[in-house]
Image 1 (cartoon, rainbow, N blue to C red):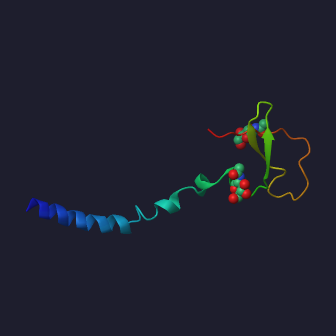
Image 2 (image 1 turned 90 degrees about the vertical axis):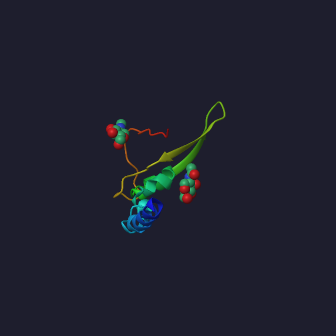
Image 3 (image 1 turned 90 degrees about the horizontal axis):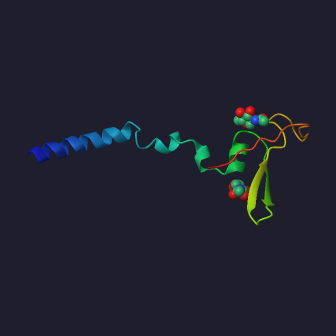
Length: 89
Ligand SMILES: *[C@@H]1O[C@H](CO)[C@@H](O)[C@H](O)[C@H]1NC(C)=O
Ligand SMILES: *[C@@H]1O[C@H](CO)[C@@H](O)[C@H](O)[C@H]1NC(C)=O
């Protein structure tokens, strides 16, 4: 008999958990940037992005992203600005 109660309790709790959105909303709550590469993250945030491959003297190929101007400006490149380095990992 205790097994029967355990089964009934579980059977009642599972639909409650699903309809409360605990499981089903999980994918919607994850930040979409998690699945994007660097260019996509830059463009997702409203900036223009240029992608370059740079080969180092010892043969490594590095992917470099350039943000040529801010969100509002169109076309004109920033005059004298410092590069800002970001890296993954
Ligand atoms: C990032 O994603 C964009 C759009 O899918 C693609 O064009 C670009 O080549 C990707 N960049 C890298 C470094 O994978
Ligand atoms: C580079 O970006 C970071 C993060 O947005 C900011 O805190 C920092 O001041 C920036 N550095 C320069 C030199 O602009």
